[in-house]
Image (cartoon, rainbow, N blue to C red):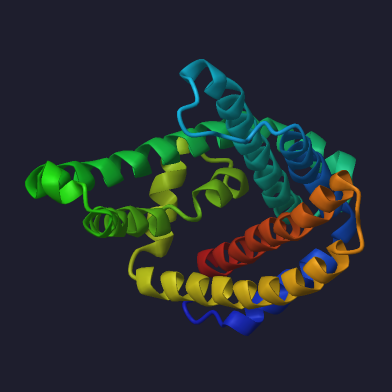
Length: 253
């Protein structure tokens, strides 16, 4: 396995893949991310209000579940395109479709595991702290941060599980185990590599948001504003998957 993987190598490999497959990646993003997100936001399906009755929360929950489902499909499609090296939108959709159900299953399993890990730490801490301490927002926030640490530990260990599932045509639990083996002994390396990547992304996003905000001042059409507002997050999500995918490929060699 290749241990000394540089940030520059991963960055330029990811840029090259992104440029080479720009049209296909954009079409995937439009279909599985941008269009659904604009539709949901334009129709106010994610708006929540204090004291909203439980029955009125159903559209919000359905919208969130749908967006999460489509996001998983987008991820599986991009990962498959990296595996197959096919640049055709139709070929990627057709080939990736056999992984969609497993990828969704893995996403659900991962979410359950991580939430359980968070609760296993948070509930005893909350019990020890007592109700009077929990009424303090600062203390409550501190407990959440403490409970988040072990969840982060396992999240990093399983970060490559979807890539394993598709590249190795692996089962759900096997993917978690293989991802753990890849990260084992290099947890801090993976953590700091991803931290550096997201810090660089934050700087780039900040600059782009300033430019976008300036341009949006001249656009008076709400639908177009939503479109351009969600365009940057779409490309960020796609590029993040490519970067992590290239990191996975480098480490598994």
